[in-house]
Length: 164
Image (tube, rainbow, N blue to C red):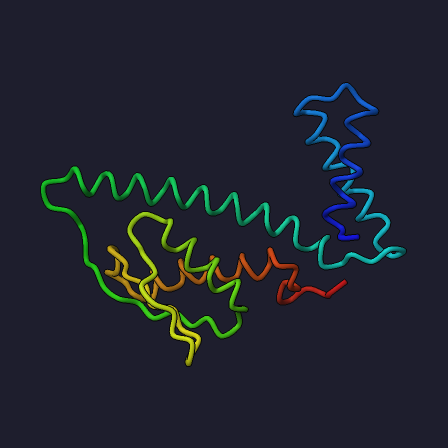
């Protein structure tokens, strides 16, 4: 049984033991996660324990970037002279799996002001058209942040930390 399914099962048990509702579901999910964290030495699940906070952090950061980029683009569209300097940017995706690369390109494309144009299979590179490429290296670093968060959300160990 997957650890997500076990966590969901513990969530449902908690909901039945408590008063229910959305709050009960959220608390039940958190309690189930805590049980899995404490039982990790006995039942395993190291990657799930690492992946869940990473996935939640990816959602939070993406939501923040989505709002920030939307406001910036809306402001520039309403200005008489927009501050656009479009360019194509090449991003290396050699450390991402094919599924992670697709998720990476989707997140980049969903962020206003950038769109993934092509994925080069031979060199594992992603080509992105960005409206704000005044500083191409800064734009590249902002997009690489999504790749790091995707790796973290997949349960990969965080660099500089001890695995386990």
